[in-house]
Image (tube, rainbow, N blue to C red; front, side, top):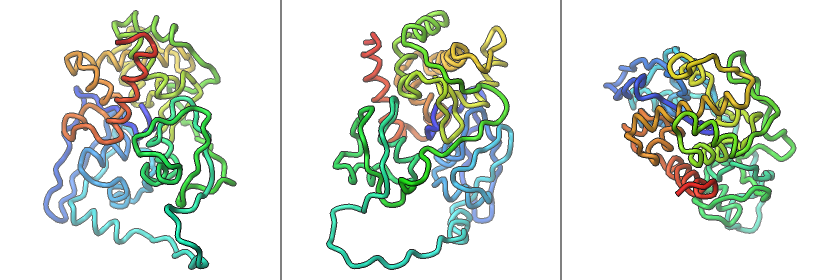
Length: 309
C-alpha cells in the first residue's frame, strides 16, 4: 500500500467507476474512496497528477481526504490549468561545460529494505529513467539494500533532510518503532486464509517489516495501510477492534484487505498484488501501470524467498 507509493487501494465493492472526461468546461466530481490518492485518481482518469492537482488548486503531493470531492476536468480544462499554474523562475544559465551522458548528480540516497527504483525516484521527484541513467542501471533494475545511489538533477539537494519529516494525523494505524518477522506475519496470515509467503512478500516490499515506516502518501506500518483503508477494514472485515498502535494489528489489517482482494479477483494472486498497490478499480479499468508491473514482479520474486511457489 505505498505511497508509496504511489499507492493506491481502491476497493472493488466501494470503487466508483472512473469518470470519463466530458466536453470542455464539463468537470465532474469524484468522491475520494478508501485508500485513494491524488495519483491513483489521476491514473484512473488517464491524466497526469500535476494536471488534476492544478485544476483543483492543489500541489501534486497533496493528500486527499476520504469522502471529499475532487473535480475531474476535461482535457481542455486540464491543459488550461497546467498552463495557468505558477511557473518556477528560470534557472541562471550554467557555465559552459563538457557534454555529459546524463544530468549532473544532485545528492545521494542509500537504498533501504523494501525500496524499489520507481519508489526512490517518486520520493525524489524525478523519473525512474533519469535515476537509472544516473547510476548506469536499466529502469527495471532491482535495487539492493545498502547500495548508494546518486540522485539526478531535480532531486532534493543532499543537504536537505531525506526523507522529509512526515506529520502523522490522528487516527489509525499509528507507526511505532517496532519490527516483525516473516514467521509472525505468516502465522497471522494463516489465521485468515492468506498464504503466509504472499503476505510476507508484500510486507517486505512495502516496509521491510518495519512498523515505523510512513510513506509520502501517508501509508503506515508493516503493511503500509492507509488511514481510510484501516477504517474500512475495521468496519467491514475485522471481527474485533483493531489496535492502531499494534504491529500485529497492522499486519492483520493488511492481511484482511489482501484476503478481500484475493476473493474479488477469484484467487488471482497477480491481480490481487497489483490491486494492493494500484487499487482494484484502477487495475480493472486501466490495466497494470508500469510501476505496478514492477511491483508485482518484485513481490512474486520475494514470495519464493518466504517459502512460496
